[in-house]
Length: 249
Ligand code: F6R
Image 1: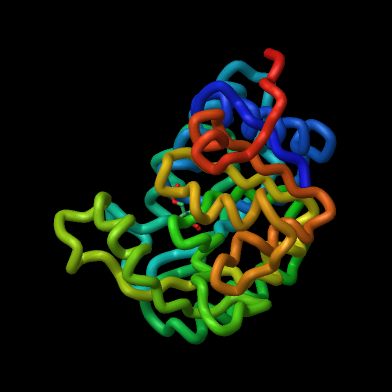
Image 2 (image 1 turned 45 degrees about the vertical axis):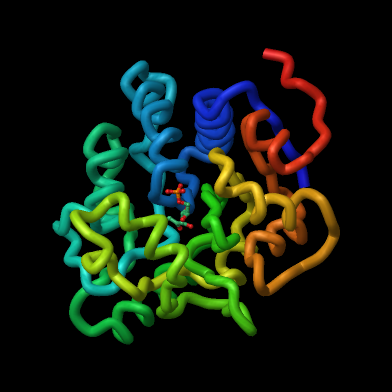
């Protein structure tokens, strides 16, 4: 696992966007695995900027998102489909037919089956990941077991607390989500896990400071991946107690 320690969250996002851009340059019809939330939100403006500058073409790119809340229709302001449209897809030359976000309303079992089928269609070339305060990736929450494939996950109280900032009040935060499984994430050819903020330090310790794989900290499984890069800023690295070489750029 490669670890890059940057000078700022902004630099973290810029580097992640460049790495995603490199994948697309090498493979113009790449499949991107995408994430939502504040961390991923910092990356998308760099992709939009490169697309507008004419240096990054999304016309043959396809995408599939990690997760979607159960109970929110695609046009709900806090749905992950809407997040992706507003933060990325509305601003780049991607064919909307090539973007997949699981559907969180209607027949949920059928939606999970459809999402599983979509995941099987082709491998993910690069998967963007944030990390929850409890170590979740996608919405694979700590528990007795982790799941290989896409499934419905009950969100932890800490996740509901963390995501309440996006809703009028905590009661509106969905308690379940459709998520890629840990296996789906680990099958991506390349993983990019980004983090910022002191509240992510405990989860990061399990990933960066030891060799343990811990179902109570799902992000620790990222260390088993043959091509994973973790990008964090130095404020977070210091909080974690991770020793690093300062970045030269
Ligand atoms: C989002 C997702 C989550 C987030 C994580 C961090 O699609 O799968 O794992 O990446 O909850 O969220 P932020 O970046 O908002 O702290």
